[in-house]
Image 1 (cartoon, helix red, strand yellow):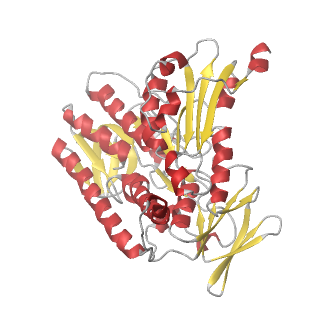
Image 2 (cartoon, helix red, strand yellow):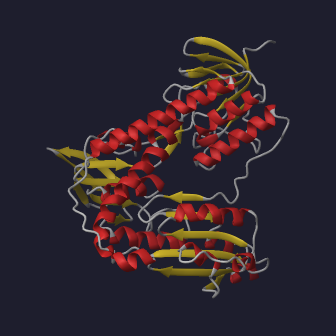
Image 3 (tube, one colour):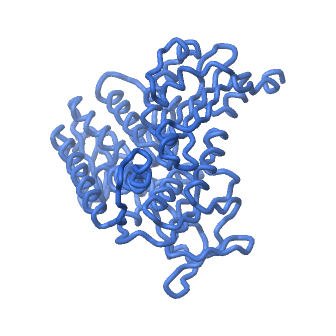
Length: 458
């Protein structure tokens, strides 16, 4: 059978664009459909515009800290409209680049919704299109909690449509998104309440980092409601009232629900193509990202494996090389560096202490200090924490974790070392760059504690 395309990609986010573009450079006839915006969540309503807002939020604190360094800076207030115009212009620029990358590589783009008719046939904006291979890369979407009045609250996408900073904002959830926006809006001048059900924020991260972040949130005046779940949201005049299970209530001007995301598979008609989903709605894939239909693959957040933009991009590239580049390969999900742009930011790579200790004895090297800048600025609660998790048997550095200024920038380099399997002695023989915070990662000499001995003995 002659198909219209060798490859059709559903979804124009990071994963889909990279996969389609690379496949086209390998000579494949590629079609790609995107119904909303090129670049997906990350470029349009995620990483990029959010990081711009992180940058904006830092300037208020910098203005206040300048006096310690001899500068007389008058702080007159913040104008969201000015930031929004600059932010949205940058998003539009990047959005256009994604489209040009595809057309420049020879892809045929469709600004329309695609859904399955059968395993090789798609309805693309009312047009019937066939493809030998199909890749699903439709990403995820933010979800609201199942409580009365949830429609009165915002989701992360809605933040970028705000015309002014709420005087009082309540954020529900303590993952990446909730914590980053809590810090952003606190930095922009809002009173912020943070509601989460655990005893510490950032479930799944290293325990020392989580504890240090909780202290840092307190220090900047974010009110944390720990161990609470929302019960209902009501409008009362010109404000909102968020009731929590247990009886507590918060009076607020806006509520942001950051309680999770779901794979964006609704309306794809996956059953028509024989594509199965897992219990949580993610598309079921094997180690090669092949679905239950042999000619269909799924990549990125729609698989709910490791929902990070660079991971999605890497998987898309590897799949294109495998299918059309005569270079079968996989992108590794191990030792993936990541950052959380809270205030202060977090950078991490590799195993947490708890995960590593469950596999055997580990040595922990940890330091906490006030960075040089804040010994001068006198800003409260701006401590840096750095930590290495080292296997006692092999001396390999299994994990590195940091909370502090420039953590994301520093962790990119440390990520190379951890992914390469370097040992603590490799770190020790590396000369530090002085004076920097980063040098602490190569000058940690005294073991703080050991962990996992009992687990190994058992």
